[in-house]
Image (cartoon, rainbow, N blue to C red):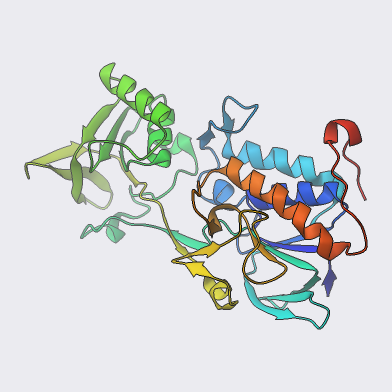
Length: 334
């Protein structure tokens, strides 16, 4: 059985930063993730996606951020169980937990931290009659390698941050990028929306607002995308690739049976320390919810910091926590 102080469910950017904050307080961490590698959504779905809102980085690729975080936590020697799903949680007589995975791994810990992003997730697919026929034959739900789209005709559908960011990034790679959105305004960051409008005005991309996906056609591989506008008029666009970026459908899996207070597919937490209604269980990052919640990586970092300060009392109940700045105290391994 693996012995640790904090068992972190989810090895995405927020879970990794929790290791850093816990390490500063001399708490050991073991991370479990259903994906076969660390990085969560960043590594699995969009490793090359540019991220613009990490302090100190005007722009950083998703995988680069994960690589840097792994380097950052190296002094604290976290351990990992990857490619396994957390199945069961058993509270012990002393208040600690034993966490069991789908492959029989058992982890004994004082605190459980749920940092599972959106949980077990799958992309939301547009309701098109032929969509499954063209999956991996022109229809992609994520961008794994931007070079796939070099000199290709590309249609991106969506109005959130991912659609905007990829339209901006791929405008320098694809032969032509057409961004399609069903509304006349975007849900994504205003700065990204401004960049999209500027690219459209300069002729660098085609922007079709108030348009809906209607159908896709081709002979074995995707050849064209059919749209309809608000006047029900049909538009046909030649396309080598269609990337619908409508977000992800979250599924909590067995976590939903742990007695936690849930709001739809999110875990309710106290903003004082991001604890749940179950003692010694915390939830940080996209998987939690509270008034004013923003699903941003940097907000998850803040939540991880306060969580670690609170979890200290369970790991070292006889000690008084004394907060020290890293600029003064440095970063020391165990």
